[in-house]
Length: 130
Image 1 (tube, rainbow, N blue to C red):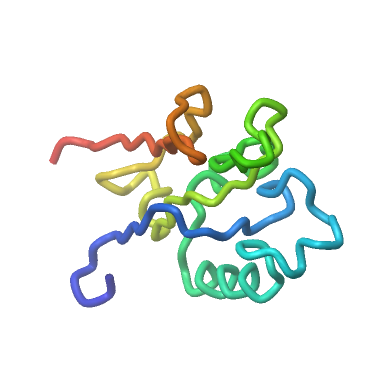
Image 2 (image 1 turned 90 degrees about the horizontal axis):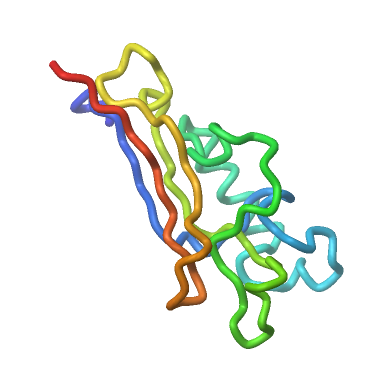
């Protein structure tokens, strides 16, 4: 990013539920030992963001609850929306500046598409003409 002066985005199933709002049962005793939600994993993700990146969904919807991208099929958790948000768009700050050529406008999950234990996640971008 610094060498080319270009914005950076990395995305996908990062297999981490970062914040309390990203976990349907945050505070449950077993979570400290469950993959994807251990304190060490959550802190590591925090450190990655603190070097200058943003979780696009959380930047655009800081207080949103109940928006998950993964549900256990074995436990039948999709219907009652007992999920985790494991899929992310991690973006450099330029994506949130009105001065940028590409601006993140919205991010959301399409949770009514079935076919996996995950659902599609979307980041809507505005691309300004040069």
